[in-house]
Image 1 (spheres, rainbow, N blue to C red):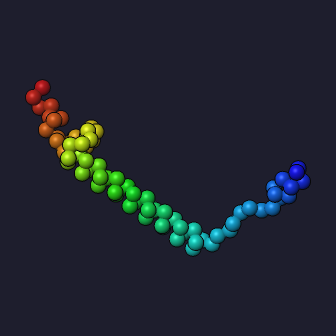
Image 2: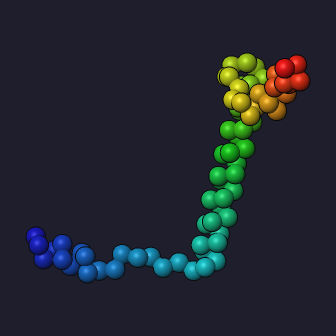
Length: 73
């Protein structure tokens, strides 16, 4: 059993890819990530508009800046 593990460790397990294959994969991955972020942002905006989730400070400042008006003090 020890010899079998030794042989497995000696065999290279890398799978070389070309630069064009990598760039195609990277473009696809970036597009998927961007689409997921856009979908999450759209859903969050819908939830905020519906009042189902609480806004964080940045969202509150962008949507209701009058809340942060300190001119009265």
